[in-house]
Amino acid sequence: MAKYLVQIIVLGTQVVGKAFARALRQEIAASQEAARRAGGGSKGAQSAAASARTGISLDEAKEILNVKNLKDPDQLETIENNFKRFFEANDRKNGGSFYLQSKVVRAKERLDEELANTRSSKQKPTAE
Image (cartoon, rainbow, N blue to C red; front, side, top):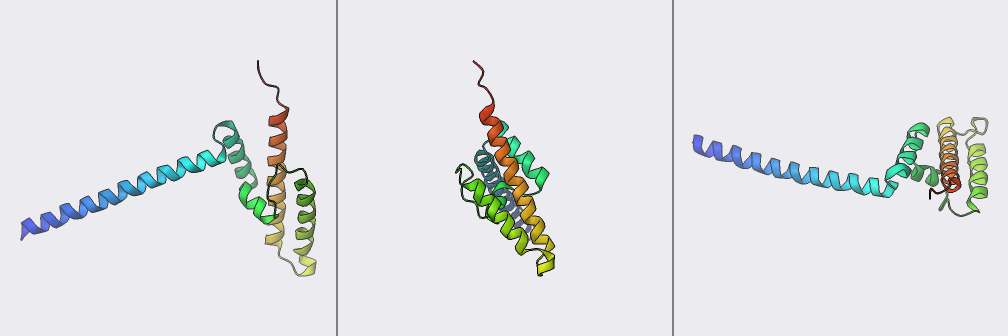
């Protein structure tokens, strides 16, 4: 009887150990993929710092203000127009939500910061 109990414990431990190892490998792969998408290096660090300061990710900010591509010059006008429209629509005087209004403000701040980072990285002279 004790022999079977020990076998069950050993097999159970092996199954749990293999599942944990597989989950750990998947988490590492997901983390590496996220770092790759963020741009890695100093660009990724700048993006992460901006996200931490504003409390909102770049993707979330783009989704809130309905912006597709920041590289398009017409997007500056779109960002401004959408910001004004969403900010006014969520005004508490009009029965709007302060929470949503603050999300719109944070999204605008995040996109402005990303655009400023993009401009400053383009203006830096290359070392020769």
